[in-house]
View 1: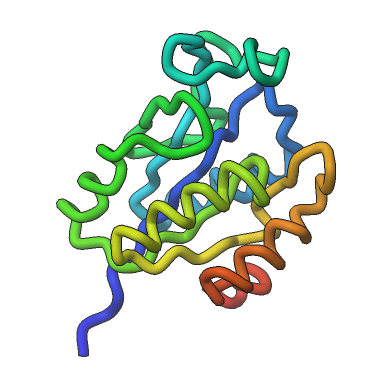
View 2: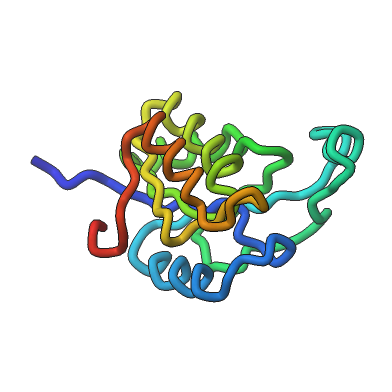
Length: 157
């Protein structure tokens, strides 16, 4: 049986979200071993009404803090549909997900990947949660409930 084709999805690891240096370093090291795709959140009020509904806006132009083979800009919680097309074109089956806001943006990416027939897997040691839970444990619990695939640490890769 052929090995499962895996890729790494790094969600919104950018300067304005104050990602711990240890998480950035860990993702950077892992990005050297997998095809890596990163998303960056950018503000466009015409696309996603952050200012109107939440009184907050992400940056208008920011780059990922980690190296990636491909970067997708997103406006809001979901990655763009082109991200799914990219993974399908590569024949990816399992997507290892890490990054910012494990219980919102990472979870939204997980739903999108799951609905596309891919197998999303959370890397909680390389993720941070929102201000509600910076540890990402809430995100890991939600992820385990919805997708069942959460790795315990780098040895599980």
